Length: 139
Image 1 (cartoon, rainbow, N blue to C red):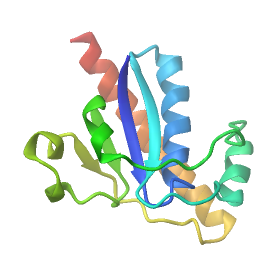
Image 2: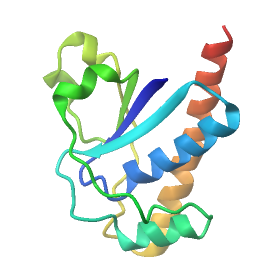
Image 3: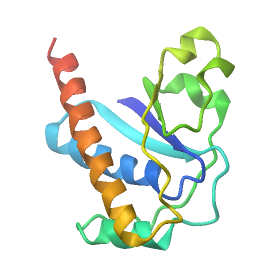
């Protein structure tokens, strides 16, 4: 099984949402990928509003917790998607090629409506990513 890593600062909002959506859609599409997530400075818990907006669409993050990004583990991932929390130029070229930046603002300290918008933006990007990976597996 190939792995993808989603990284944000606290691993309490965007990267957790991305991991959940990715694993849901990867399973539905039966692609040979699984996602994990991590934070460069992990928080103590997942944002309560993030938990709520995911519960609204029947995805529970209640058993999840923020995890620390470990640079030494980076080689085990096919792709690393950063929400602006990894500086590509700090890694060797072979790693830089794996890092993709998604420009989605951190709304973890915003109201719940903003977090819903973030959730929906991430879901759209995940659907596109899954489609790209599915096509690659077919080729």
